[in-house]
Length: 338
Ligand SMILES: *Cc1c(COP(=O)(O)O)cnc(C)c1O
Image 1 (cartoon, rainbow, N blue to C red):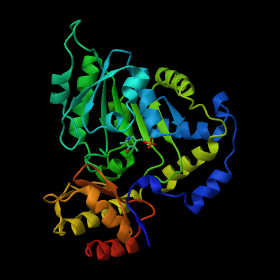
Image 2 (image 1 turned 120 degrees about the horizontal axis):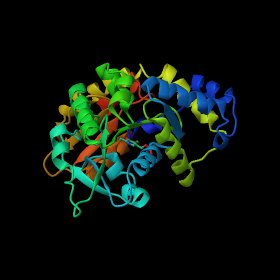
Image 3 (image 1 turned 30 degrees about the vertical axis):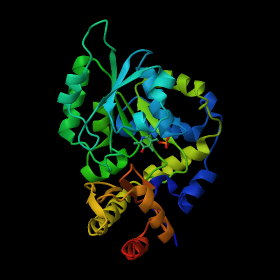
Image 4 (image 1 turned 90 degrees about the vertical axis):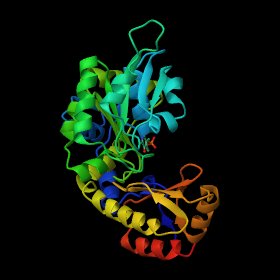
């Protein structure tokens, strides 16, 4: 038996989702004529109280499109050093937007208004112009950490007053919403653009949605085409996204409870130095002394616990749709044998 804790991207479509996919009305989305894609885009734009939305193949593409629309060549993106847009998108900030990046060191990947304010480049011809602030919520590399409402409000107010657009990498935003009770419309008010992933904990096989105002999405559609992301009968996939939003959001709370349990089990192991605070569905452990993830991940995998190395001394476990209570019992039994 294998317990799949490497990522919430391993989730498989449920029976109800498969039915929804195969019965979806389809058309050519490059012509704007796939009714199911249009329904998904309207649904997500409506949830966030934003004007328009664009269905994209991946969260990376959504983020990269947003950056390319907001930022011009030679300008800079301000973000935390743990950001997915910086660490895990193949250098796309530079390669796609021709932009530089100013990295800040936040608290588990979360920035404050004061930090952002202090980092804005002066109005000076020597400086790299600050053109975008990008936040991530939840923060993947921060162990699924969540922003406080007050911090988001302050950062948003500041960016508005300085006329710098604010983007959210909300790949796991719904995990944060389920914990905090914050509403999507609040995020629509705070941010100029938001990307969400349908294929993480929400359980769709493929897809991300980018939201923003009409002018932004019009430009985004052009960039998506340029990147090769203009797709045809994508309603097959959009139907999975609609199904996920209708049926698989509330259940994220179960993933969070199981992540808490995994965190508590790990905290008792002699070879674990610390467990980062568990807030959502991600558990990051730091190994003790000279123990390395290169040595321990294979040991865990050999026992049937699939997990991901997350730095020389860190390991990540992610709970999701296809991890149940029986897996948890097995996890505890197996990991104590190491
Ligand atoms: C997974 C992820 C993405 C990118 O999503 P893909 O669909 O894998 O390209 C972006 N940001 C964060 C924080 C993620 O965890």
